[in-house]
Image (spheres, rainbow, N blue to C red):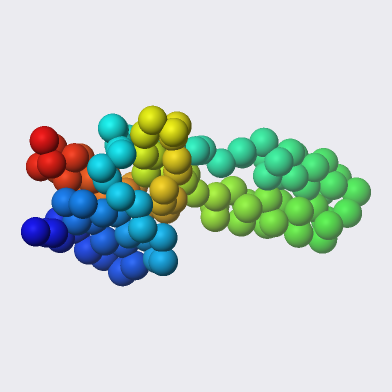
Length: 118
């Protein structure tokens, strides 16, 4: 009997399957589940901010525009969190989101599903 352990939007975890959108993964071949993260590259917006500061000395409006753009770029960069499924075939990034709590909940449900099949 298939039992739903987690459901949110287009993500469903049952004791037998992991469904994201239209893609279904059977959990029978999954040996482990983990959460990984990717931090954004902050170097380019910081360089833009520095160039903006330098431009302030000879062109106020250009310097301000570059500083605002660099600041917005930094502000909107978010760490991405991934659900990683490990199987005999290798690892697979099955789901990515900027919401750490959501990804943590999915990983917990997947781990519960793996434990329940044993």
